[in-house]
Image (cartoon, rainbow, N blue to C red; front, side, top):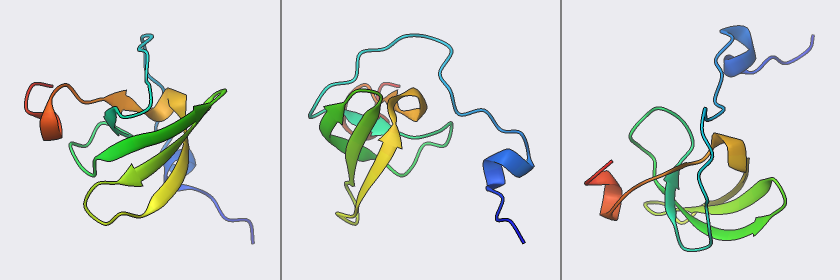
Length: 77
């Protein structure tokens, strides 16, 4: 049996509809939900190395899925 992601199953698009520069040190989230928040550790091509600000867990994500948070913890987004 092939594994199918939640996004594929429900045809959810996580891509941004606009261009936004994301750089090391920015706070981002990876979808339309307000949490979790990640800090960008590194950017390489179309991928970002992210660190969860609450759990300190690292992950890799496509830049197209990242949305910059304006201000600390989304205060102004």
